[in-house]
Image 1 (cartoon, one colour):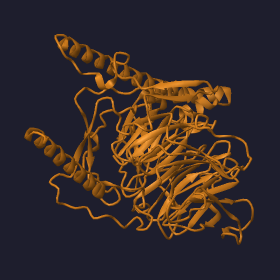
Image 2: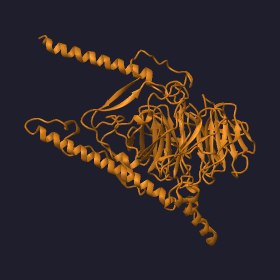
Image 3: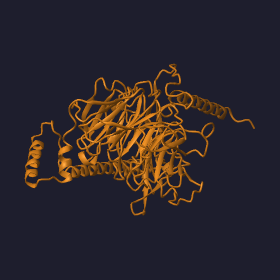
Image 4: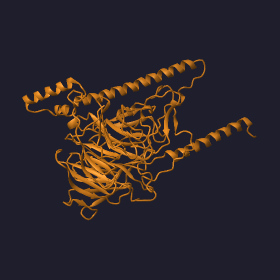
Length: 583
């Protein structure tokens, strides 16, 4: 029997809607799909897709249904996750939703019969209570980290130059105390040095012949590593802040693809690992020879570490965007363009875990503490995922077996960025970390908030999506006015520009600042410093002629009042006495 005309009309409407949705999705992929920093492996960073201008709007809103996370995939995530604490005990991280225990989420909001209005009021009351719980958890976490930072600083706040007489009085009192006691505790040293930001003029330590992508200190601060696009990595001896740096090693990268994407020094300052847009890392023993120039397999061995089972190109090939040594030097963590993170056992010389939980390039990875158990990853899918290698089934044996664990389920996730992430820096306490995003924001996070899901109203939440390419277009909105409807971050800092490349952010060191500050490079060539205690911008450093292009990376010396930065004009700059433009 032929279906009635009314049913045919309904089917035609559904088909038209489906066709429109598929067309919109295709347009979104064409205009908005930005993969990592170099685009595709074939085209390189400057080969861009043409952005059409046929659309009347340059953005659209993506609807998020109630109770659904933007990044969640039903095949990968459910309402529960587990994380192990320091003792190995299992912590259940459950996402709470209003109305839990009284029917499934899909049934919430349905009201029939005479009690419909009463059910509606009950649901709204539960949503308000859930929102209050979420905001309370957020407030407690923020107060907690501020309390930790105050304790690191000896219970004092304030910054020289802010007009607070009590801060100056406290410093004078500390100086008198030192005269009588003849020494200071580490807490008092941090209390004083955290108030004095570098001031004066920047100094150029070196100028390379190409763009500088990497710039960071070794863990002990004795070496500064700079990585350039022309295959070179230069290691500088950093002895005293008052003396010029000397070139200790110049390493010529092996099998470079576009640029050096990341470097990491082992905790003992023995091994330097570098990555490029390839599934193969290379490791160099920087103390193996006295030659300043290190050439692959001529003056030094550049040992390959294969993350891709021998698939250097073609199907299965991918690039590595970010790498990090674990605190004990046993593992190397990598974030890759195939939407995965890898954990490599250095002693066994094999990949022990591949975690595939993201839906886009993994641009950044970081261990959260010295135990090397918990780590986080940030992706172009706008999400942060939390992983515990003990839950992923890794083994500490060195049998050399080629078997490895493959997981698609993270132990938690956090959302708050509306564009892809570019870098994550851990505070080192296993809880707090910061992230930079292409939404022009630096955010402070607490992994415990992964167990708190901000409730949405039963009306659909909306998150803006823009048709733009961060590599060559400005951000198409005011960052202050764009917010994720389910933001789980604790604090947000804006002012710097995360454009053209994967701009990096970091924590200030414990020894001299008590980790009071966070700082970031910027597309405008300036260095931005933010005060976590005060929750505002603390200083902006401008180097004038030294950084006339993008400042991609920067770092703070772990023991000296010294900042260093690198930029696309090839300059390596020291900021031991830079003059800040304070608010």
